[in-house]
Image (cartoon, rainbow, N blue to C red; front, side, top):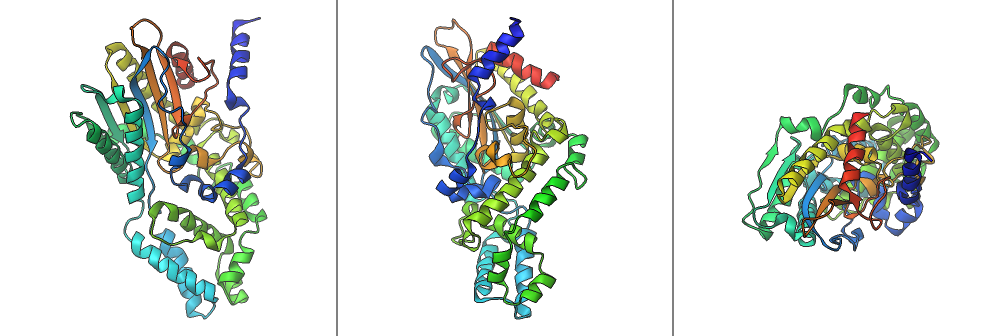
Length: 426
């Protein structure tokens, strides 16, 4: 049998990514916050107990990292003022129910906290990265031991820079001797936040996702009950309010409440089924604009090739030099999502194109919650004799690749490196 066929069959047997499936209804029933999708606050209670394990006879010496910024406020004040304006206008026309007036009061409280902070890292977002860094240092102390070479870079967006600062602050609390240069500049955007002109066009209103997305959106009836509970005048609501947009705007506000901690529960206005339906809609839209959506012919996941090249280059440098330390990168969900899909990590890539079926093989709350992170831990033999092993963690849980592994957990660098090269040379 040809060697390439043998290798493929071995990978097929060993790689859960090729048979991975989600049960999103069960997931969201168990933890309703997951319906927030990419607004889901980082699930620290879901971290693997295997995080921190080291293969016998080895030591962790290097961490290659890409992290999404932590929890944040909505990216524009209009996310708050838009729906508030709809309610203010309805109030002026005496068209709100008592529940609608209560919702209006709640939104005033929320906006008092969020005004002028659009897109900024929230206090929870800072704590998330602080915690991730402390757990990493505790799990793999050799990486930040004295004389460690650690570098950090973020995109030019302030929430990413502030996430980087929180992460580094935690490391320096543990080892004050660390000297960690950090940058947030345009020179790093070309790999941390790359987007080709082709992919930008495919994400536009003319993109291939628009037609199935609009059809799926119209098929959902999540706005009907909500409208009657908020607006007392059905004719006014029908003439003056975009029902679908109103429900979706409220969904995003409700989702973001777990990130800003202002003491207001907006999820009460949407039933679990309505939250699930809107999550499905935006799970598809997000996937179809940034991941392995087939009509895009790989244009979105190709945006992650510069990150993969940076991963290879830096790993080679640390391995050759014998140094220990970390390469820390801070960006966005729209960069981490294509990276995980390009790598072929379990549950991060699918060929499904039907919006109604996508959730069975892809769920954004598992891939890119707030503060999502991909960590590649490099291990070398303590006696200096043997091969380099690598273990991947996505959100501090094991991440599997379509490659043969050692003990089902570790990948040989001399096999992983050619695989990564193949992804950027296509």
